[in-house]
Length: 168
Image (cartoon, rainbow, N blue to C red; front, side):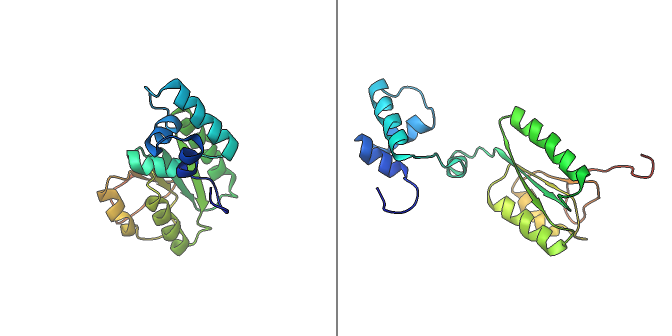
């Protein structure tokens, strides 16, 4: 095992005396692994403290199981309530939610949104601060669903959930 950092699947394979593919199949819950080999792998996982890299696994499988949420201000109770509701639905659907706050800064919104997209998220919810969201055009073309919340976005085809604050 490496002297620093987290143990890898290579470390688990060496410790268990099995192939890397066998470790992969066990930690990803694939069927048809010999029970004795599976036990050896799981014992090594426990002994070494190995944790599956969910991001790497989702990149390989193409399973985008994370939703990104860029709020304008996470200290705003409205956005936290929305985040809690999205999180509850994501959990029910066996997905994850990653939240960030643009602090009403258009440049930070762009940086955060594109960073989340680079992490292969399955969808992006943005409370717009920027005047132009064409920076998300390529992501939308690649199939990342984008939804604007509370304020309309512009410069990119996307759905929007808008509120009638005056009427409410």
